[in-house]
Image (tube, rainbow, N blue to C red):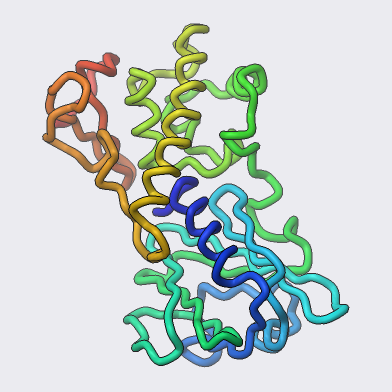
Length: 279
């Protein structure tokens, strides 16, 4: 699932390649609409978008937001939540469609933005008010825009496991399973430690690790992804999906715990904690 670092770079590429372009074709496959398309304007997904221009692309949490406007018309927003298997692809109009391509946006420069989703788990919302999109208005602040004091205050209501807190969009927006593992490894904190068990210096360490991990990842993804926005480069990660490999810090084999359809990877030596069954 793409998270803040990947989506930040995807946003940068789309700003370069798509902003200013007119949408000359909208193709929903199959006709009538896959379940990923959610038209909250009730004015017609294709009809509303045809002939408009992309005025901007931004990221908020795990949403990519296309600001779209016809000449002198009111703005409309295409908000894309890629979820687990959704990806965007930049392609030429003559390139063969990939399997499970759900939506194609044709641009005036003969390029296309394609939405591909193997499991149809993502959503493409068309809305005139972003607050109408489920979960959008309740997102917490961006993790790279929050101060240490605010971070401390926002932690206080939570009492559960710290990894679960990090991945709650209401706490901070944009961190998912993979980068929660990376942040906690960087902070030397066990993923199943209760928030209430964290000491003051550990909270400070967690905040510093969150910023350092995400900033470094954005730089690495920018280099490795370039303009292949359908890719998810993660070979550089320290622990996530590295089960059994040596910890980059101490050499201990990386452990795995799989619960509730979520994989957690960590180092038992660097991140001491409770007795957890797993590799």
